[in-house]
Image (tube, rainbow, N blue to C red; front, side, top):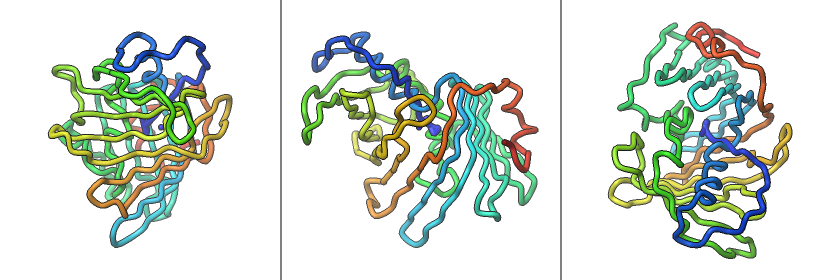
Length: 255
């Protein structure tokens, strides 16, 4: 979901024993890595709908999104008409936005990774998923058991020293039966919870089970939210590195 983009899963069922609470063994890292790669695969193409509710207004966006590996992503707005062609590109360490109304390409500096994307509660970092949890965070299992009749793991993640990440701590809950994430909480460097992302509407798209709904709510304004709904997604599509180019960033329509 990594979106984005932010957001991927290698959904293969494993049968090893559950890791113990507080452990940081290969099994725990494997589970978190699967959630970290939710809906990424080697490459993907998706149709998404984004519903943004703020205190004073609501807007709906429809977009096409492509990704390849961990370093290439392109998101292009299709609706509403007044936003059509607005796009975001990540190619390796570089991120750009294209604004068709003024025909301008803007390179996004690292200092703006926490900036809002298209007025939503998702950030630039969410959509391009610059960090990777198993390399950038120390991982411990803070809960292993049953909640509301479902067996889950809860993982607490603290950044490793000098990691280029924007969060002070992450807490993630995952269903044990199928490795589906249920929620993730984000904390700042002072330990204050900033927002919660919840996952739902688990369905099989292409060849794998994924949560097709992700919702973010900020802690300080819980009446606000942004929902991302995956309407369709294809995994492991044939995408050349050259597809993720400034030329395609400016294209009015890609299919």
